[in-house]
Image (cartoon, rainbow, N blue to C red):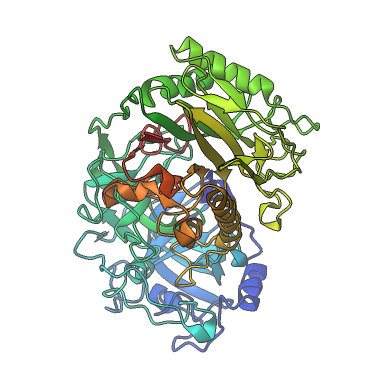
Length: 616
């Protein structure tokens, strides 16, 4: 689930147009202010809700001390009232971002007066659901003096951040919280909004989201909030948003000051201090003027045990757009993980195998070269000579990177398990459940499940196949459900946030659930394993739909709650990858989410693989 840091996307200077768009979308309300539009204070601009009462108005003589300067990306600087608490109202921020559009000439400690237009900038646009950032645009800046002490930072810590995450939005306003009075002592999001633009600090804090490619990491200021043994913060329900999480960036360009590399569980010693920003990819972000160092706590990549002779080991692994153009070291690292960390499972369902020339959009759909290069690398790493089965997609019909033609693939070790080839299907031909004597079988193996169903439009179709292990047939269905793209973030101005992508996954889950029920109608005690990148949580409606009628059980639920995760997103450790089993598999299985990627700054994929071992 890749993303792009907001500071890499310059803002348009046409703030008037942004305000108009936000007004039209209901994000802004133009209201009367108790303050004059002339010579107002910062807290008058910020107001007591998420939206400025002066949005769209010209203001003059706004006084403050410069607390941070950003000369790249969204260029500008932050100012704050000199005493930091000018109106003594905890709901009104005393900080403000001044958007310049070019490299600012001021520096921290300058006392300035600023005139300009009050705007509400919505990172990602109004349709994103993101909260808006109050700012001044088209500024005229006068430096009154330099070398002034900075306002004392407000400390964000476990005591100051409320346990409740956000108020429920106003139904009359489409569940938006924008117009609600801020209650910073009651809700974490209200606290952060009340500090928007202000100089804040966190003390030494545990890292809960590893350093990423955009030079940012996540910490928690609540060390005991849903903590697990490896140092992460577990996202266990829609009501456990983990309000102690905060994104950390830095003001200094990385060319001048390298950003620290951290894994989950490490400690940002000395914490960070700087303005509190809001961006598209993470919401509230401390943009550090002063940044501590990382204390390495030695997190190790996990290794699962080898299956016993009578156990069938089935795994799922999203290999993140693998194609022959990727460096050999990526193939080697992924192969080493299959052999060493996953202990060479008997069957491996792969997601995101691209075609033979990757994202080159020329109609190529075969992935034979990709798979040969990968299986060769597994042999070189000391693993078995895996065979493979798949169904090539129609060109550009399965979503993903244009031209990449990602698909699911079965790898299997023919020395341990055999594959039943039966009239292999194509991209558009569905495999059906048929009876052979008293047993269920597939009309096409490998084959695709219900590929014409609208649920799979512009999405990966499930791949089904029959395997035989020690004389017992096992049906395996590999999936890569629709992504969460389009869902609103936890910091959305809609509370609860809109999860629009779930509608498609619900339809997909129902289709797979129906197919499993067809197998069980033909053979009640059939061994069925449904697995892959489900792109949804174990507590989600998607998982409930897969489990409907007792057809399947999500095996990750057999783990302690603190161990249920395969992915880390914005500092939340969470489930996206799953293996589900039919009642025929029974409850005596062994399940392992093998943590080798998601918690680390250096990743071969952004997903952790899953392994299920059972005796058919």
